Image (cartoon, rainbow, N blue to C red; front, side):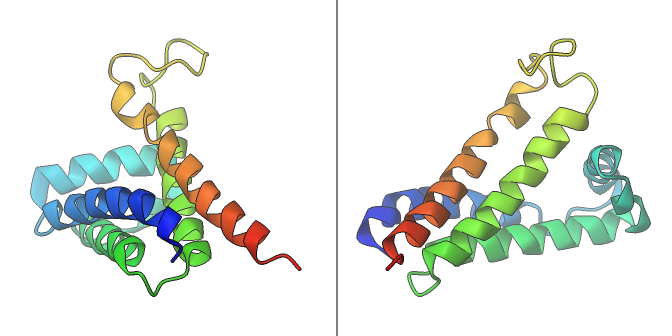
Amino acid sequence: MRLSHAPLRVAIGAYILNSGLGKRGLEGEAAAGMHGMAAGAMPQLRQIPPDRFAVLLSRGEVALGAALLAPFVPSLLAGAALTAFGAGLVQLYLKTPGMREGSSLRPSQEGIGLAKDVWLVGAGLTLVLDSLVRHRP
């Protein structure tokens, strides 16, 4: 990990790790609500039971957060994972009814929490692109 990547990776990694740890043990209505929202944007997730989805999401966030925090994980790999995770959240924002004002990209009051996740895509792409540019001959 480059020293210049450390502030970005530590800030985002700690945030995502904390989010994943907070979802441990999520079940019942809380898991069903989270699963329902995700399945509304990505119908293939309907095949996964809500409690299982919550476990997988929690573990995925913990793994991503830990990868971002671990200095031995290359920024290219951590950035690619962060970009994919952020893209999933942006897809959730774009496909969930009521998150946007009409047909525009502007978030509604309810959508602000998800719309802000576009910064994860930007941060992930920054790590990926910087890694690729620095390794070019």
